[in-house]
Image (cartoon, rainbow over all chains, first blue to last red; front, side, top):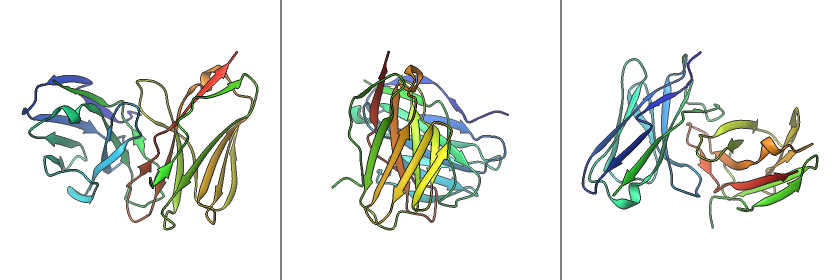
Length: 114
Length: 111
């Protein structure tokens, strides 16, 4: 049973560039959430997608956008990168949007902005 | 005041001892509570979930929730070196999957 898969695992960008990160949820899951984890911090919620729509959003600027496809996979896009965007980006999947749902996390995409 | 607060540690315990990890949260509307373990450079892995006041046991792990005191804890019995990791407390207010995490407590289990 495939878990949550993310790509790429590592990437380096320069300030001002744009990046796209990809996530395939665990088999049977239909909801995808994205989190940003800076070094030494806990993950911070970016947004959640369900039924191809953004359902919840954390305190992140509009430079952060996303998409969910009919097969439940998702993309996170970040425009106009700046140094502070350097972090581990985690995708988490679940079945449905109940607050009691357990999230399964992927291994993450580590973004370095120079 | 942070929404979810944890002592960053490190918390050092000898092998075989009980490790006690604590977490407080500020939102009284929080309904679901989770403990995740995160090894260095890896993704968070669910250890325990708890939804009602009291204790919940799973193997060597016990989660305790006190909503009146806005406090949740994790006890690890018979601590092993493989338990050395950062433990993240997370809460959910309900109505979606948004988790609010603490900064994590680093646990070191020493031989």
